[in-house]
Length: 275
Length: 173
Image (cartoon, rainbow over all chains, first blue to last red):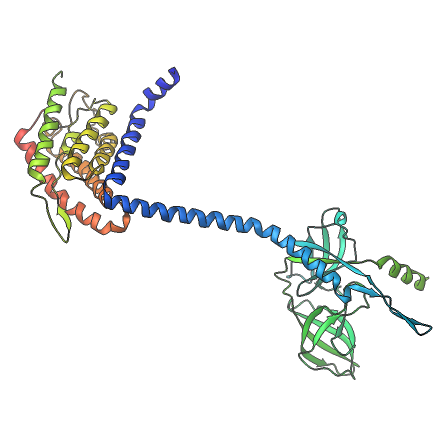
C-alpha cells in the first residue's frame, strides 16, 4: 500500500493524465457518431491485418511439416517405381520365375549449404550417418541428379556436386542405349558435357539424357537434361555433347539420398574382380 | 498569493462564458466545415500559476474542456485536447525560461513577463492546442489537409482575441 502511494506521488501527474485522456478518448469514440465510425473502421482494419499476419506466420511454420510430409510421400512413390526394384525374372528350364525385390530406397534431406561458383562445388545436407546416409551414395532431386555423397558425420553429409571437376556420372541417351560420361567443364552451371558417345550413334539435339544402371548410384531412367549442342571433334571418334540440366543447381533445396540395398554385393563383386 | 484560487476560478467561469456565449455563435465556415472558429478558453491553461500542482492543472483543464464540449456537442474532443495541453505546458515554459528563472508564485502573464515573451509563449500553446483539437475532431490523418487549413484559419483569430483580452484586463497573476 505504501509502495502504491509512493508510486502515485512520483507518477501521479502522469497517471492522472493517462486516466483523463482515456476518459476523453472513450467519450469521443462513444458519443460522437463520426469519430466512432472512424474508430471502429480503423479497429477492423487493424484486426484484419493482425489476422492476416498470424495466418502468414502459421502458414510458414506449417510449410516445414508439409515439406517433410511430401518428401516421405514422394519416397514411397519412388520406391514403388520399377526402376527402384531389382527384377528376379529368369528363364530356367522354360519356366519363367518372376518377382521384384526392392533395390533402391530413398532418404529425404534438405540442402543446408551449396555453391556453384567454384570449379569444385560441394553441398551439405542435414542428414547423416544416423539417418542411414553413407559415403558414395547418389543424391537426386525432383528434377534430376545432384551429386554423390563424399563424407558423412552422424547428422550431416558432404556431397560432391555434379558441378565438380572430378564428377563422373554415367549417363545414356534416352531411347538409344548409347552411354557416355557426364562431366563439367567448370564454366556454366546450367550445362554439362557428355563425352564418349561414339560417332556412329544416331541422335539429335533435343534428346533427353538420363541415368543408367551401370553406376549403381542412381535408379535407371532419371532425366538429367536435354541435348543442346553436338560437337564433332576432328581426329576423335567420339562426339562431345552439351547437355542443359533440368534441375537448377543454384536453387536446389530438397533432395533424396539414394540407398542401394545391394551395394555391399556389388562392392564384393568389384573386389573379387580386381583380386 | 492566497487569492490565486479565487482569481483562477473567476477566470475559469469568465472564459467559459465568453467561449460558449460569444465565440460559439460567431464561428463560421463553408462546405459543411467550420473553418473560422475562435478558441479562447485555453487562455485559462496558459495563465495558470507556475506553481500549480500537475493534478490540479489536469483536472481543471479536463473540467474546462468537458464543459466546452457540452456546449459544442463534441464530447471529449476539447477535454482530451485541454488535458494534453495542460500536461505539456511545462515544456514551452522550460524552453522560454528567463535567465534568472521564474518566480513560482507568479503566473505567466503579459504584465509579469512582457509583451513579446507572452506573445511567443501563448502562440506556441495555442498553435499546439488548435492542431491537436482539429486532429481529434477529424480523428483520422486522412483529413490532414483540412486539419491544417482549420488550424491556420483559427489560429490568427484566436490569438487576436486573446491579445485583446490581455490588453483589456491586463491581469498581474
